[in-house]
Length: 103
Image 1 (tube, helix red, strand yellow):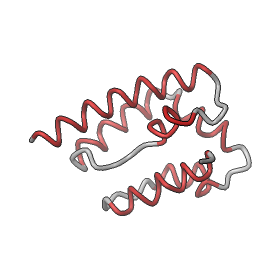
Image 2 (tube, rainbow, N blue to C red):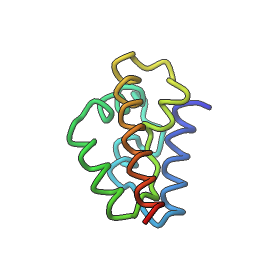
Image 3 (cartoon, helix red, strand yellow):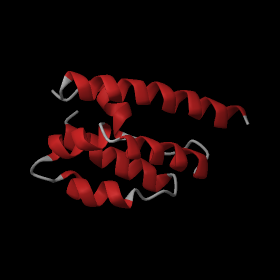
Image 4 (tube, rainbow, N blue to C red):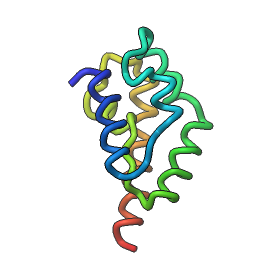
């Protein structure tokens, strides 16, 4: 899987969950941004994005998926700092998702 394919999958899966990640789509240009690695790295390292992830998780009862989850699996030749943050966020996302699945 490529980073572009992961971005496309995030968009597709979230639309199926009735959530359209408009800002993500705009920033990544639907996965076709020339500087996609830089855009994704910036998103992952932005603390405001992390806050928005959990607001979205609450609003959509844990259904959305996030690029961090794909980075945790595939790394995409991103910096260690980005991968480490993505892995930490993924852990928190999965814990949050478990909460919604139990309730």
